[in-house]
Length: 312
Ligand code: AMP
Image (cartoon, rainbow, N blue to C red; front, side, top):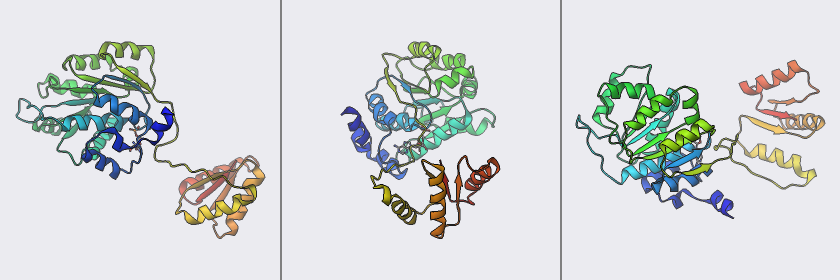
């Protein structure tokens, strides 16, 4: 019952500001993913969080939406340069991830008057420093560059209210834990702390115990299905399957379709049937077809020469 309720939960039930719901809707999100349904109420309620969730589960919105909501409710303080003081800090292991998270912050916060920026190494410091001085509410950063800027007195972490450690296990693998400890010590101990990690090795659990206060834990099952994929199930009689499939193809504006059959014979028959409807861009792939032709079929499918691949 609980699971079912979660599955049909709507974003509107999460008590997020209308401006955030509007932005989420424009992203095309229909229902919260499991990590969002579970994490958002916990973060809004002010708890520390230990979340086992990997990339692709929607974890970025799981922390970013409630953070933006909370920040939108109060005024920011000032930094020593007169700009807004940083209130939320997201630490990530890589530059690409940092950039991606800040893009999400911009998308989800487009109807709020909150600012965000990203700092990471390998690029010039000046534009990053100027942006931070002018003031941001949310800072997304890789640990090295952040400590560098902090060490030069260019940014102040004493105003942080919410701290997110994203991909904590990768941070550990990349040797970032000492840097992260330093960063944690530069933030107020009254902060709310959120830990996200795809795996929970003992070292992460120990570290989490040190950094989190009475955390609530959630664990999201590993899934290889992207959240952008919708599913449909058609109960259909055996002798109507081909007809239904052809009709679905006719009604769909597709570019790339994979069809799985139980047997090699069925794959060949279906391939011929689809060709007979005037769709030449279809290839079959199964173990009766030699390796070279199989690779050709797959490469052709990837390149778009075949729009349909029928495979066992
Ligand atoms: P993440 O795990 O944060 O990297 O997100 C994976 C992908 O899922 C991103 O492309 C998001 O835009 C997308 N996404 C996040 N939340 C939802 C949702 N509730 N519905 C549909 N897509 C989503």
